[in-house]
Length: 148
Picture (tube, one colour):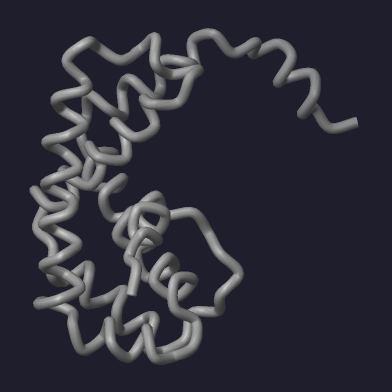
């Protein structure tokens, strides 16, 4: 069986699969079986993967290539542990459900969300994300949202 779908599922793109009990069980197991460090490693991997986009490459440092390989190795170890050890029974049930990769993607979507939450709780990240507010055109908002 090929597991090339795992990279896609870790990006946490929403899919049209309903959250069935076996998918929710795997999602819960993935969350319970990862540490804060694991989730930060996942967030780093996602960040570095997005930095490979042609429009983002100019913002990545030259040392990113080494970081990408190290991050890929860490995520491979994490996914292997999760799917073949920590959550193997839940993984088997999901894979036998007939939804395969889509169900795995949905289960990993929750882990991707946890990874992002892990970073978003940091004050520096929140402050950085809020910087755009100083450039909003408050007059346009006031005018557009004023009741008439």
